[in-house]
Image (tube, rainbow over all chains, first blue to last red; front, side, top):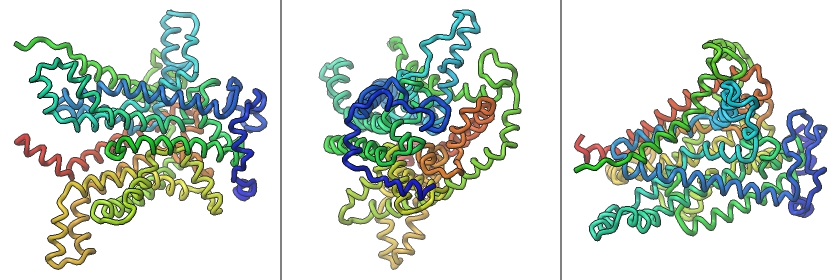
Length: 274
Length: 271
C-alpha cells in the first residue's frame, strides 16, 4: 500500500498548481461515493462552486471572523484579569484556561450534542412543547463551525492579550488620571493602543490554525461548512491525489509564512507565545 | 464614600466561564445517562458505560497506544527542549534567532500542513507509518512548549551560579549535572507533563500518520459513526479530560514552584 502510494508520485507539477485556480464544474467538485469509498456524507459537498482558490478565500474569511470574534470577546476578560482581579487573578486565569487543555475533539463533539439537529436544545424545545418541530436553525452549517471554533479558542486567547496589557507602564495611567483624563479616555488613548501588540499576537495565533482547520467542519459543518483544509485532507486520504493535495497545502503554507513574516516585522511574536 | 459599581467585568467572566464549562458538563451527564440518545429528562443514572468501556478491547488498545506515544514523545521533547533551551539561554552562536524561530514554527503552522508534510517525508524516506512516526510528529509539536518553559526557567536564575561552580574547578558536565539540572528539574517535569498532554489529545497528526493502530483521539473519531457505542466513548473521554486537567494543574504548579518571580512576588507581599 505504501509502495503503491509512493509510486503514484507526490510531486506536484505546474498542472496541479494551475488546477487550483481553475474553475471546476459542480460535477467534478462533488465526491461520488465510489471515489470516497465510504457511504458517509460526502466530505466535499456539492454547493461549493468555483475554484479551490475561492474556497481558500472562504476559509480565510471564516478564520478572520473567528479570530476577530474571539479577540473581541477575550479582550475584556484579559483586561479584567490584568487590572481588576487582583490577588484572584492566577486562580481565575487557571479556571479560564483549563478547558483548553481538555480534548479538543471532545469539546467539538460536546457542541454537537448540544447544538446539533438532534441535540439537547432541540430536544428541549420539542420536549417542552414550544414547537412541534426541531429548529431548522440548528443545522450543521458554516455558522455552526464558526460558533464552535470561537468556543474552542476562547480560553486560550486571553493569554497573549494579558501579556500585552501587563507590559503597560501603570505610571502612564496614573499620570493621565492626575492630569484630569477620564478613565474612558485613558483607556482609548493609552491602554488600547499600547495593548495592540498583544491583541495582534492573539489574533494571529487563532487565525493561522483556523485557516488550516478541517476537523471542526467535518463534525459540525454539514454540507455547506467545508473549508480549504477539507479538500487537502481528502486528497491525502480517500481522494488519493497527493500531488494536487501537496500543491494546495503549499499554497496555504506560503500564505501563512508571508503573514507570519509580515507580523513578526511589526511585533515580536515570541514574547506572547506560551 | 464607596459608590456601588456594577460588577460588569466579574459577571462577564462568570458568564463566559459557565459557557466554556457547559459542554464539558453535558459530556459528563451523557456518560452517566442511562440511554443511547441524550435528551432531557435524563433516563436515570448508570455506570454501565464505564463498565462497558473497560471491557472494550479495541478501546483499551487505543488507550495503550496513546500512552506509549505520549510517554515517548514527551520524553524526547523534554530532552531536546532542555538541550535547546540551555544552548539558547546560555550560549552565543551564529543563527540563534533563526534556530529559535524554526523551533517555535510548529506553533505557527497549521497542523494539517505539518501532517501532510510529514506524511510525504516519511513516504519519500520509505518509512512505514506507525506509532513511531506519530511519536516523532508529536515530538516536533511538543518541542515549542518544552523549549519555552525551560527557557523561562533558565532566564529566571542567575548564570553566576554556574560560573561560580566552574571557577571552583567544576568541569562543565559536572556543573550541568550538579547545578543546572537540579535547578531546572521542576521546569523539566512541568514541560514533560505539558508535552504528555499535548500528545495525548492530538488528533490531526495522529490521524495522518496512523497505520491501523489508532491513538485514542483517532479511535474516538472513528467511533462517531456508531451511535450505540457513543456513550462508552464519551465515558472514556470524560476520564481522559479529568486526567488532562490533573496533569495540566500539576504542570502549572511545578512551573510556579520553580520560578523565582513567584518567590519574589510572595516575599514582596510579605507572606
